[in-house]
Each structure stands twice: as C-alpha cells, then as structure tokens.
Amino acid sequence: MIYKQYGKTELNVSAVGFGGMRFDTARSQAENADLIHYAFDQGITWFDTAPGYCSDQSEDIFGRAIKKLAPRREDFFISTKAMPADFPTAVNTRAAVAKSLRRLQTDYIDFFYVWCIRSWPEYELAMKPGGMYEGLLQCREEGLIRHIAVSTHLRGERVEQLLSKNEFEGVLLGVNLLNFLYRWKGVEAAARMGLGVAAMNPLAGGIIPSHEKELAFLGTEGQTPTEAALRFCLSCPQITVTLNGFTTKDHIDTACRAADRAKPLTNEEITRIRSHVTEKMDRLCTGCQYCMDKCPRQIPIASFMQFYNNKILAGKSDQEMSKDLDFQKKWGFLVDRKAEAEDCIRCGRCEMACTQHLDIIHRLEEIADWERAVKESKPDPR
Image (tube, rainbow, N blue to C red):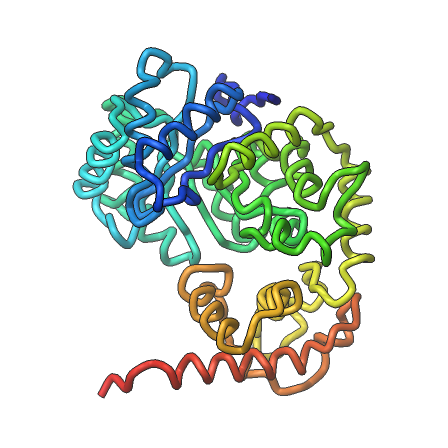
C-alpha cells in the first residue's frame, strides 16, 4: 500500500480510501462491517462516509467496525459530511457533528466536510456569520473534529477560487481518467496550495468497469481499463487519497493491487495521457473546454457534452437520459449552469472550436428534448 502525507498535516494516509457509499444493503450491517475490517487488514486507513449513504445505514455500519477497531483508533482516519442547506447555523451544525459521532461510535472525526458545494451561493451559505463553518470551527476547538475540508462539484477554475480563501485543509473532488481534463485545474490548485486532495468516482461512477470493452484503450502495460483508471488517480502526486466504493473483498483486492503497482506520474506522463485520451476517445467529449466562452447564450457546452458521454458509453435510452439529466441539474455538475440546452441558437461557434469535431448542436437538440421530457413528467404546480 502507498501512503501519502495529507496536505500540510503530518498525517500519512493510505492512497486507497474506503468509500462508504456502495455497501450491499441486502447484507447485514455486521457483514458489511467485516468488509471494513478486511480493508483495514489490507492497509487501508482512510474511511469515508456520510449521512444518507446506503439508505442511511453507512455511518451505522462504520460505527460497528470502529467499535471493534477502537484499540487502534489512532491508526486510521474517518471522514464524514454535512450539507450547508441542511445545517445552515453553527448550532445545528454542532448537533449534526454530535449525531455522527454517536453513530460512528468514536470520540472524534478526523475530517469533516462542508459537503457538496455545487454553486457559489451554497458556499456563501456555509461561510456566513453564525453558519456551518463557524460551527465546525467550534467543534474543532472542542476536539470533536480535527480537520475541516470541503467537498465540491464546481468546475476547476471555481474550485481554485474557493480554495484560495485558505479556509480548508483539504478538498474532495470527482476525478477520473475520463473527466480529469474537466477537473484538473482544481486538483492542481489544491496541490499547489498544500491541501490534501481526495478523489471520488475514480471509476467514473462505475462507467469504466461496466464498459471495459468500449474503453479498452485506457488499459496500459497489461492492465485492464479499471486497473488503469485506479492507477491514474493512485499514482498522481497531486492526489492524496482515492476513494473507492467497495461491495466485495475482490473490489478491495483490485484497488490494493493497483496501489502496489502504481508508479508516480511525472508532468510529462500526465501530458502524454492527456493527449492519448483526447486522441482515442473519438465520439466522447474529453472536457478540453475549448468550446467554453464561445457560446453567446452562455450554455455550459462542455458540461452538457460530458453528460452526453453517458449515452455513448452506456447506450442509455432517452427515458434514462432524461432521468439522469434531472439528477445532474439538481446534484451534479450541471447545477451551476447559466443556460439550458434549449437556449442554443445554432450559431456553430462551439463546433468550430471543438478539437474533436463533435456534432454539438445536434447533441444539444437531443438534450433539449430530454429537458422537455423532464418538465412534462412533473405535475402541474397549479
């Protein structure tokens, strides 16, 4: 197992992190807790959870495991989270921390995240006087939490702006081999500022292992696309810990093998991978963002094209894409958009800028149809 220093702290954490969002809830909590024990025995020391994960069972499952591991509490790290919209005051933030402590059966939480910052107003809500951040500072003073970090789905440049205020010790970002061009500015900014960087969704939410045949070009040096994707995050010097959602011991073994084989990537190697992905992904948008700032209607072209990748990779139906679109607009990387796909005026500037010559206008028309389907499926509020 690789161990890395977390930002400016003196803590060395495992490069592989246990993401507590993929437990098989058909199993008992005791069985799932045993999976955590197994991961710890394999050298994994970072365990990430949150209220609501796995039908709100995840924190309780971790609590069972932590109780058994209590004699070695200083040898591993627990992170959990809370959303500013759910806990907008210092008082109820402290209550949220206290509840997580009870469920996790521990005296302190190593890393507590201001969770799921998707737009600038959400960040401002967390930071207002008497708000969440102030409550977390109080909890840190009391020893209930040890470090304050932030989880965000903002674009790379917006992540850099957020982190520049020097309020957090680490950041959690969605980064993987398919979307790293879209997120990389944020990763680089965090590393440059000396912050710990946790990568979530290293397998693109399951897209990579589910489509290994289509993504065979990602495999290198005899590795499967899944192993290559894990290696990408695990070996990047800028990324401290890579969160994996584990359901079985085999999943843990795969991630640990990838860590054992991972070699740090130089800037030159990252550049080579960037070119390789751009060259080989053909019909997939690589998130290069050359089209950004070209749209007179301020449509987030790159974000919509990244979303459209799911149709190409997964072969999803229009109904499935409509459902996914609704989710991304509420919770994913389309939250902070300034315009909709249907606002396209077919000027063609985005297609002229596209390095892959994608049929962007046609794709926006399809997405606009999915947008309309979402609206029509919702009940009339009158």
